[in-house]
Length: 193
View 1 (spheres, one colour):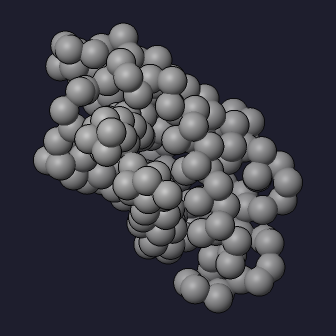
View 2 (cartoon, rainbow, N blue to C red):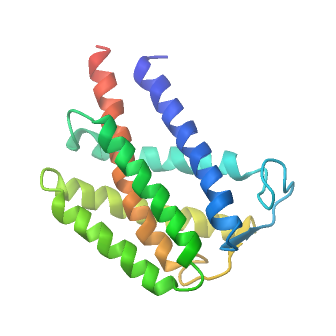
View 3 (cartoon, rainbow, N blue to C red):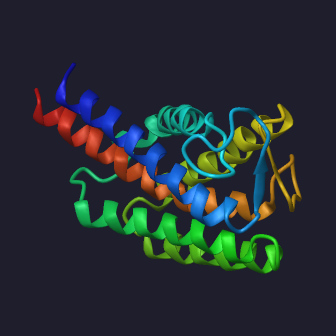
């Protein structure tokens, strides 16, 4: 395997692991959702043992869905921007745990307006960001809605396709994170030639 492939694998596994931890502390502990597939409570109390493998599959699908935008994003990736995007996604995850059930539509608008502000400030690759983020928003809701329909878990509050509307806005921000991961992949792919 080449360096960019190894780093891609590490990035996908790392993201899946991190968001598995966020799921426990931000969603399960705040009663945003409930898991049904057994076995439960293996890694974390209230979480299905299938969470990390499914998050890894979801992250992989998100990676491949945003792959067509890789060459149109930043030529020189930044660890700072990657870190900021990870922090933003984590804070949005955290916020959904606080407001996801009590003020779901207010939270949707807060996260959506924050995304619009990010898009406004993204001057260099705005069109690419919009497209990739919309792909992430739609695919993320579809992925979670489909696994919910299969009986894997259930959100306590839902609007569309068995998921809350604020989830779409959250995934819009994840589009920036995936684009930055794509940027690093392209950078390491070029440097290994």
